[in-house]
Picture 1 (spheres, rainbow, N blue to C red):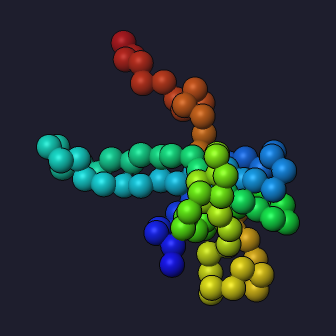
Picture 2 (picture 1 turned 90 degrees about the vertical axis):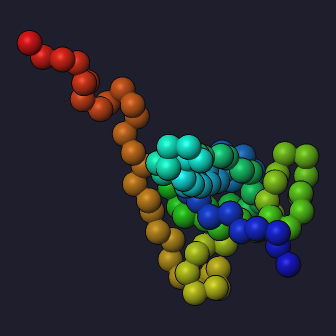
Picture 3 (picture 1 turned 90 degrees about the horizontal axis):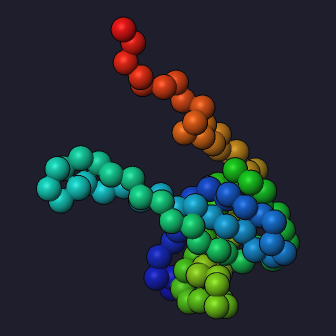
Length: 106
């Protein structure tokens, strides 16, 4: 039984049999009561190199696979079978420098 299931987006697939999954968690700030987003990257094992960047992935974290991999086994979210459904690409947001500036206009 896994301790936790990490669901996120694949941000890197450059390593052999390893993917980097960005997991986002949201919680209410203890004082301000505003919803805050925090992200963390986890390395997960990908035996067949089937995950590409921007795919959604679910990584099971029962124990550490190696020194750097914190999750083992990845599956695609859906009906519970990892090979029976297609992958869904998630659009990535713009980098911060591409947003319009908020400079005051006179």
